[in-house]
Length: 308
Image (cartoon, helix red, strand yellow):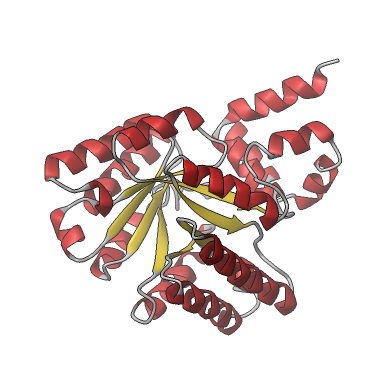
């Protein structure tokens, strides 16, 4: 119930503007968001590089209301790619299609996405196309499939909590796609999504096994397992060892600010680990979804709010 309530609140940006005036909230947000500007994010990425970790950078924002805002978001990603190249960082962009204008026009979104993919391809970088709520799944996958032949650097995302993912994943494997498997962090009805953690974890494990089959890897699929669950990480590593899959053929992904204690252990196993570093003024929805994933963070916030 708490998770459902937090996901409901994640769609209330007015509350975010109120919380932004509370110093404690701003401090807690910095546990998950590098800052409001790219200048704040790049030192974090450089520290990850020193620790022999890969990274991804995302400019927070979604569901823009104007064409100008969508084009500005694409321009930010172009600047990020230029800076990544200048600093020679093991970092790639990760973006949302509604930030590039998908709600406004499919043509506008595609134009902006192609601009970013083209710059990333020229720089030899992947570009992750994030998955949003189920209202966008069909359009996101259709656009990915339409651009895949031209942009082999385009990477996509599948959410384990969606019931449809068992059908979507084989299509993407057939394309030899680069695929991030995550659990999913949006509010979805039970007819579309698994509800309990046990169900989501079980489906995640099934999809993981499918991504690690010799057939999937032979087609060129590259899996990225986005999870902070030690059991699922151990399962991925164990399955790879059993099948003789070398570490460079897959990676683990984690979010900035979550499970720092796991990073060294994963790296020391010889596994590739990528940390997603978000930044931007539009932090509220992202932040509340992180609270929904780990209610202990909410308890920390509330405890400090009432502390004299």
